[in-house]
Amino acid sequence: VPELPEVETVVRDLGPQLAGQRIRSVWLTRDRAVLGRILRYPKDPAAFRQRLRGRRLEQVERRGKYIVMRLDRPPADRAEERLVIHLGMTGHLRVWKPEEPVVKHTHVRLSLESGLELRYDDPRQFGRLLLGTEAELILAGVLPRLGPEPLAAELTADDFSRLVRGRRRAIKAALLDQSFLAGVGNIYADEACFVAGVRPGRRADRLTLRERRALYSAIREVLEKSILARGSSVINYVDGFGERGSNQENLAVYGRAGEPCLRCGTPLRSTRLAGRTTVYCRRCQR
DNA sequence: ACCTACCTGGCC
DNA sequence: GGCCAGGTAGGT
Image 1 (spheres, chains in turn red, yellow, blue):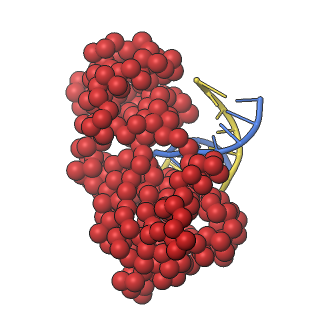
Image 2 (image 1 turned 135 degrees about the vertical axis):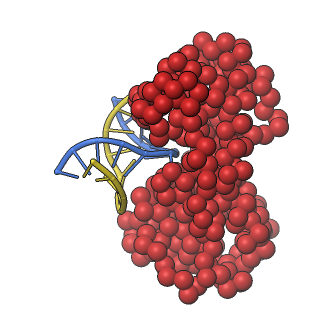
């Protein structure tokens, strides 16, 4: 579900509600099988609870599709720990009033000093929670290395161009690879390729300089536009307040297979690429 | 650099 | 009942 714009929206929503809040208590589902899938580090639910209880949430940030919450320093002056959350396909992270009914598939609840509750629900259980220092999480192999942030000012068109030139796979496969670029998923990969006029199946290293530049701008454009629209709620994405985004109304190709291209009217084609449904216009995209 | 698996739920 | 879904990991 959530790609960069959706995660960014959740992070911006949660920041003010969570920053400075101490965690009073930690509730975890008693379903051990579910916990085993979701708690990636520490694996032991008791250890996870104990390490989180009483800690203060300092700041909420995003890295790729990950939500990163910095925690206050532990007593013994050890390195700073983070609570890292990936929403998978169907994860939701929201602040609730304690009296509000707990929705099905709620796996984690943190009660805060403010009296509110941070709840994590995830029907498909593809999301995950990690808690530890950066070194610890990297050592445990639970934090994959991520490529650059597509919206970072440091990533220039030339940088991007160089990265693309070095890949031999389909450009869309590269865009979906989080170690190549962090945060783009199936929706925005297709949308960016459309805006850039590039077929998703083109080999990355065969794109022209012009096309690589167009793609660089297109990626930033579709991501920024979606952030402004508070994300794409195609199926069940909601923001940190439980509200749907509106960027699904801006999507030109994703989910529009067979419908006329908005630019030329040709019916959009659907194919399978990198294991994902891929929609493009065979006339506008070369 | 591919597949397939991992889950639930919605739609045909 | 089967297929599909915005995600990754883990095996080949």
